[in-house]
Image (cartoon, rainbow, N blue to C red):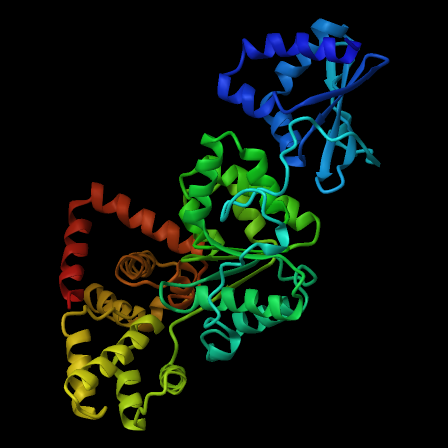
Amino acid sequence: MQKHYSVWNNCLKVIKDNVPAVSFRTWFEPIVPLSLENEILTIQVPSPFFYEYLEEKFIDLLRKTLRKELGEDAKLEYSVVVDRSNYTNTQISAGAETRGSAVTYPWAGSQKLSNKAVTPPLETPKGSFNPFVIPGIQKLNIDPQLNPDKSFDNFIEGECNRLARAAGLAVSSHPGGTAFNPLFIYSESGLGKTHIAQAIGLQVKTLYPEKIVLYITANKFQTQFTDARLKNEINNFLHFYQMIDLLIIDDVHEMAGKPGTQEIFFHIFNHLHQVGKQLIMTSDKPPVELQGLEQRLISRFKWGLSAELSVPDFKTREAILKKKAYRDGIELPDEVAAYLAQNITSNVRELEGALISLLAQSTLNRKSISMEVATEVVDKLVKNVRVELSIDYIGRIVCEHMNVPIELLHSATRKREIVQARQIAMYFSKNLTKTSLASIGQQIGGKDHATVLHACKTVTNLQETDKRFRMILQDISKKLQV
């Protein structure tokens, strides 16, 4: 047996006794020893992610076992496969070098990279793994998972979405080639995040048919990752996602509290971004307000553009109704469209649901669509719905109860009673509305989201320790009940 195989097999015997069986199968069995020259052992790993994971989790163990076999001058060099179609690899001089008692890692500063063809590793799977279909399917046949109805043609532009739509069109024209990478779209539910994200995907497929586009929810991504881990197919899972030219992750906030999913997405994100591929993510909150996600992920979400979708105004709601009615072949009188738009204001999904209910009522009762039918539909939809308070109304109630002039609430004064009233208004605004922290701060004194977070924490702490303050909050809460 050649010496590099012998040395590596001896290392594996030690490693196997020091790591869980699953970790050994996943992270060490796929490694192929390539050569041993001048105390430098070169091993081939299947991907950049594989290399990064070994460096992060197992470098101490690798260093100790290699020194045991080759002595204190032992070094380790990785041969990283970056293109599985022709097995091009990247050489990374990544060995631990001992200088006295200090250990230095040359790759941590600058990496010396060179490409050359190498023999395919024995563990290389045939074909491309595709978690959506049977493994082995050609990558050009990957289904983008897009809904053809969610196009830009069917997306009504308004003040509520103009920035996101404009950024989406720019990304569609030059995916991966704009400053909007990643493009992070956020809003409350039902305001069009998924529509605009899929519209970008559809446009890219129209302009660049050869590009690989994929839309997937964060929840489905998590399920696929779990399945791949159970089947010991992490590398195949990773290679599949590294092929994507435009990756759309919907509801990325659902990765919160799932460290394994976040870790592999972090490496997928890094790879795609570094090679100029486009990433799009949607969430119910801006990056700065996401909880349960690693800071390194959140920082990357901020690299590109964050665009908010807000509640559409009356004209936009009316235009959405007319567009959908026209597309579905429904004769919708102008007065009915205006009535629906005036009374259903929460989100686009409820607005479209009202139109469907209106059509159903009209069909079942064999009546034409009229104001009478529209009134019945609206009464059923909004009858028991709690009206959301406005931040301005909350501010007025707080100031009235605390005998503070409303104009001082929005001033820069630091008087104790004014600051406390401002903090209470922010606290109730956060708990009783769906408005983002940044927007709350902007509307109450022109503050930032960090000030709102501090205010909420201060109010929460005070009500737990100060009985009089707790009574004030209870009285204001009663006045705000609707």
